[in-house]
Image 1 (cartoon, one colour):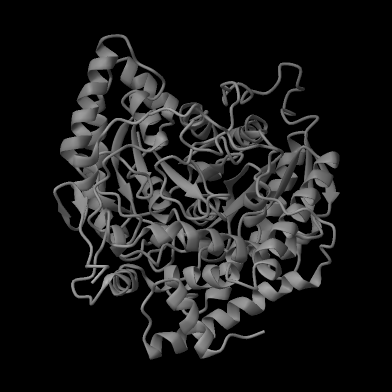
Image 2: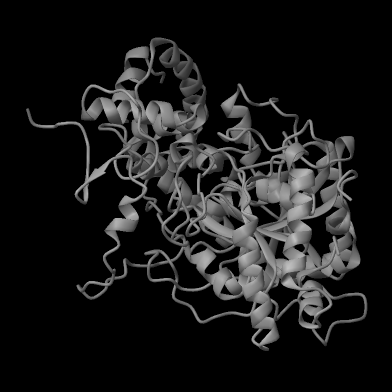
Length: 95
Length: 493
């Protein structure tokens, strides 16, 4: 398989990354090289093989539903690009 | 002092032959002298470092010293350290001063270790050469025209050039072991889940694991004793009793003289010695295998039939997880925000386009594509199934042997820029290292000789789950019989 320029632009849109025409063309070549490498996966039959996400047989740990963190919003917001009255500022979303 | 082990430094500190402040200053002076040419450190803050060193000296004076009290440690810039710039090698986080400590940093601080500085790395740990960093490439102390390996190339170069006695790195597909091999030092990636990922900026969460990089296996064991252990803040952290990783370093008392590795079966996978392996690397690895046999180990031929599929599967799983993890960088709560934008989606798109470098964007695009509607089964699920096959290969292999030994990388360190325009060629550097990440197994690299242009060669040792102490013993015994790990490059005296 091979990605068209249109598909590259669509994926960049999904990933929320602005991409110029020139960048999309450069990315297309590299991505198709990488997908040729990835295609080698198809050479093995994996019928009936269970997918593996973790080396150990572990299950998600659960904890009691109680507050464990202290309020540090002033510290955490001190590194934000734009903050006002304890709120993160972004461009207007609803007109 | 330059070649002193952590144990020797600790003894000198305990006997008050040197203070922690003097030791920190000694390394800060070396950084000031050597770093401009090597670019291994991206942040040094002598005020903070010396303050920690003074506190360590007070602990020592009060008789409260632990094994690492007063020892300076270089941290890969992927670890959040409170009050320290933590950039992950990216413009996206170029102004990010961490408001909290990673678990690893917390542990080292509590053990009395001193933060010497933050080391350079491939952007978001995506690379095998430490060339994709926003702060410019790191140079290999053995030959400044070559790369140190990556992504923990700054940590590797820091230890190699003796700008730090020891460092911390992270390994998603070989990022501790390959730079250790290229730089002539030792490094270990523990069993997945042994070292907490809390505060370690995420790349591919099911593969990422932190670990030490040092001059010797003995130093690695001492470091692991501090950084390993359960942490509830990492949902994949394993609850296990604390382990002393130094406990097996010495040869068993029953061992014959000169045969400290008697009874150890080392498996040599035939797939690791085929096409693509440099003859210089093969020769050094063969010599190391012969040395281990001389020390009493028994060589067993094994097969890992699916190992050729590890790189293709890795380059689906790692980018898929990365595309999800890196969606948090949106220019809202921290990090880079573009100066001009029209609306919120435009702010996301421009901030991410300007904040991420080319390799990071490439991997986000691959990951986004393989997870997108209609492709999940063909790529991500298929890769997760191959991951199972690879783990099963190892399980079969470990029925016949205790450790699996081979080369860490197909070649010695390559030249700066040599693979920069060909991502696939760069990815193939990880061919012997990614399998351990996919299976979640512990793996390490130790120096075993020199290849082309007198560049270091690494020996790769993979163990079964939780076999770190056995791997460290084999490596330590090998290092007692050889001196590859003590060699250091010219020009860094």
